[in-house]
Amino acid sequence: MIIQCKSCEKKFSVPDGAIGASGRLVQCGSCGQKWTQYPNQPKDKKSGKIKEIPQNKNNLNKPKITKQANKKRIKKQGPTMYSSEYLKKKHGLNISKNESPNKNEKKNYSSSSKIGFFGTLAILIVFLTSIFGILHLTQDLIIYNYPFLENYFLYFYETIQNLILLGKGLFGYY
Image (tube, rainbow, N blue to C red; front, side, top):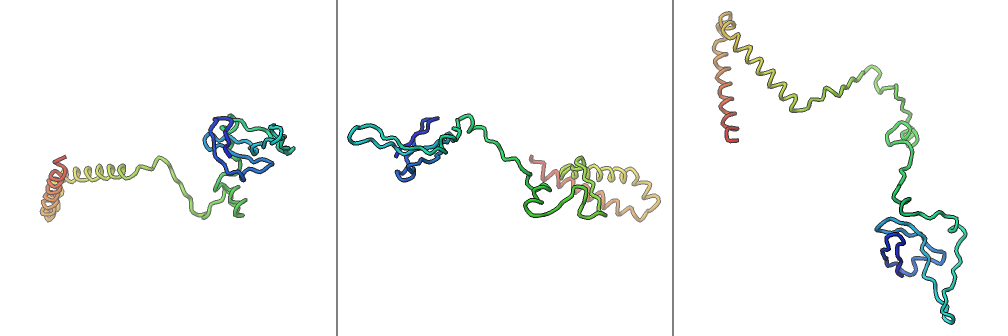
């Protein structure tokens, strides 16, 4: 049996036994239109006229779904998932908004404190650069008061120079 959508006029092949005498609700796979499909009306062999198939009274009272009504799909209204209403209804959990799991523990999360990895890296670089600058400015004063630290300062600055050369060697080609 071949049926045709009344909205977009696309044709579909359906097995003959799939649609009973009382009809069946079908839906177009292309546009989504729904309608009640009745089997092909048999012709009377003697007169050649189409026989009338009695329809259910229930089908007459059903509103017909148009293409416009099908496009507007209304989402079921109800409690949102993981809300206190949903958890109480589904799992029997009673959660109060005023109550926290640990009353002694106060959590203060501020959305402005989320600086991320690169923000932290930038802050660390600025902090280390300022510490190195302060050490360089006060190097003579520290060595004057603590003469045994002179070799440590020399090794420290030599290490910094080696790291700078290593960085230039790694990133110099880019």
